[in-house]
Image 1 (cartoon, helix red, strand yellow):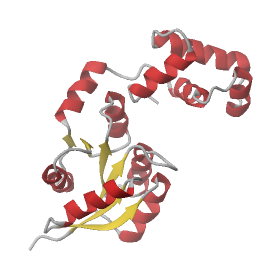
Image 2 (image 1 turned 45 degrees about the horizontal axis):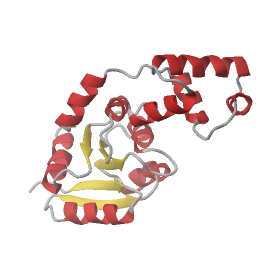
Image 3 (image 1 turned 120 degrees about the horizontal axis):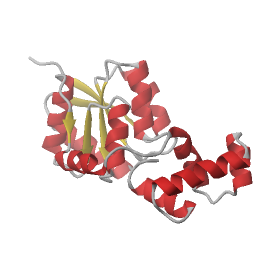
Amino acid sequence: MSRTIKVLLAEDQSMVREALAALLGLEDDIEVVAQVARGDEVLAAARAHDIDVALLDIEMPGMTGIEAAARVHRELPDVKLVVLTTFGRPGYLRSAMESGADAFLVKDAPAAQLAEAVRKVLAGERVIDPTLAAAALAEGANPLTDREREVLRAAEDGSTNAELAATLHLSQGTVRNYLSTAIQKLAVRNRAEAVRIAREKGWL
């Protein structure tokens, strides 16, 4: 008899999390042994429950699912990582793969497909939603550097250059240069548009 696959489910919306847990619980060989609602709770729960697979939503408080995946991959390399998203943003797929994810699926995929993905990643396979894969290839790589992304993320709340400089421990001129370069790369008119485009494409 095959052993039961122990799964951690990380999703901040309790209704979605409970529905996913119930659907996976119908599978004979899968058991959801832990559930968390925050990204920064994932690693501790993964350790405490000795899981095989972590299912991680991207948008969570505390830490994104992609950041949580990177942390688990670094600390618990034997744990398989399945990233789930509501938004089919091409940049998310690239970021998820770079973080060590073994699978990337949209949340509205059939439950049987999700269960099969859990089995496949445990067997060493990589599972990627084909539509998202095609979109990511068409979109190309994220043109922004890590520092440009950091500055754009900090600018989302409308902070002035002086405030950004203080927050990021940079000079105002350096902040202005990073913002200007990001705006040019994204072919937009201002920082607000740069933030919006980068966020829509999953580059932040």
